[in-house]
Image (tube, rainbow, N blue to C red):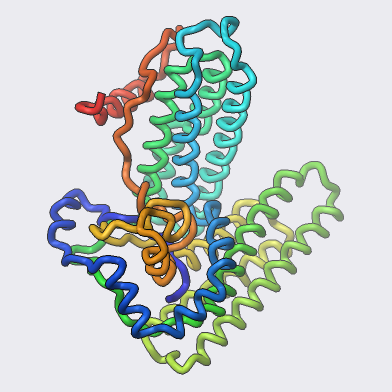
Length: 402
């Protein structure tokens, strides 16, 4: 048990199927739990006392790392496509429908999602400028070239005009594209990477883990408050803006101080010399250093891209994204929270021990082949050539599934 990670299932390499066959057989959940109960009963008892708070905190982490934010945006597009498929107005004129209120609700959801995607792009651009990374720069360039936010706003109009078939196809296309971009942000596992089983390692006390989750949650809230103040900047006079910026800076100072206290607690553990605990200590200490930088930026005050990028880096450090090989054992990975798959209570304990993090995408990390119920419709609208090519590529994935 350590600081939670954002886990992506699969190696991320082209020869993934072969890699999965080469992986050693992983014990079933029951065997893993038996080992955990036998070796670490005290840890399990401590975890049980705090598990409810952990789950509540983890569920709120969808808006944390860039991978999680893109995965969440992808799932929202799937939900919108499903809602569109449930409409009974396919092929009818707008005036001949009786579901305008439903379509209005779906269009509002899509509009909200286009705003979220715009924020992701802006935040990623600021982060890539602060910490240049080939993966982020490549995905950012693709997102900007695809004009994804503008295309999603066009989708709002299509939904409003009852272009149900076209809207369903486009929503599913963006679901798969957003999911692919999330995957491309993370490096593949190294050759021979992975492994199975539940390793017996030194653990962070659950109380410390919960405190770190609280710190992450506070940092996520601070980023949203910083964004809101930046958006309201033009409507505020200089004194009011300075006052609110100073408040945000003070908040960041408090979070940084609490983070350094957590680092001190980790360094005082009996197992502090163990490499795993040292790794956790280094991660928390690094986050505290970046928090201090974010504090000084906010104190100027500056609530623009530099501040957002610094706060985003803190979140990325504390919720580091990693890959884990696909597990043939199956339980506990299909939901938005740890252990929400089909493995039941035993698999929940295993997922909790591994702390893969709220919004774990282990069950939805790969592009699914889905055939929409309504494939085409008369829309009278000409799609951009680049978008048409993207749709062609999407339809190619549906061969054999029609």
